[in-house]
Length: 232
Ligand SMILES: [Zn+2]
Ligand SMILES: [Zn+2]
Image (cartoon, rainbow, N blue to C red; front, side, top):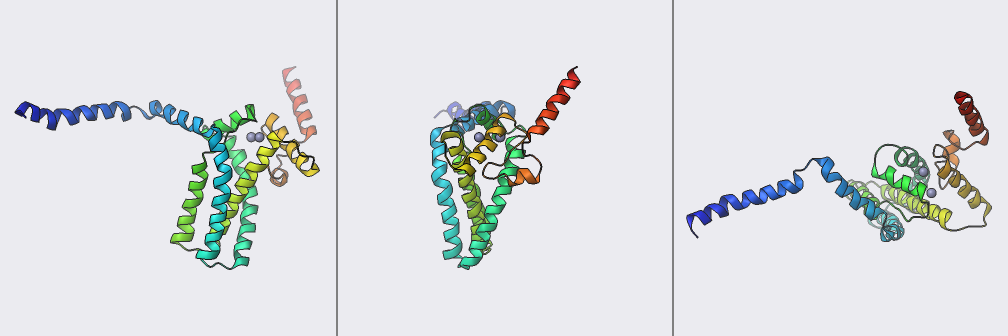
């Protein structure tokens, strides 16, 4: 190796490598973002991601409940109470998430949800590892590190609620059930697909009633009349 070669090896080569890296990563974040977004959008829109979620979510829920009872030795009734409380919490989370995350802001979740509104039968879903990853993080913090009794059952119920929500929503768009209660729920959701500022609940109508976002024919008629009056 001549002195010149040595100089190239120790000085020029790393510098060139650095320049290459700068060309890839040194771009402005706005320039890099579309790549990440395209990847995530493609991933979320892939059928396998959608289907995998139907396996990972219930498995995560079962794992959390089993851990609570067998590893932390939580009293079964305390775990059951926590699970029921978690399911109730889920109904509110479902409403809040749909109303304030899926229908607001400039996020991927909002864009993905608009795609669902346009093509309701498309198999779109949150990346499965985001939901499972979130629950495993909660499990690690509350059940492994802090060892809070019944906390894992609470998060297990949120995972189970999410799985229930995904199942109900899938059936609403892909099957026709004769059950009167379910048909009412489907009608409630179909109205939301046309009028995006009402009927945010998917598995229940309770929180729409509480927060006054349930569809009422009369309100829409009055608004239509007001719009017409403004134009004239
Ligand atoms: Zn829908
Ligand atoms: Zn929506």
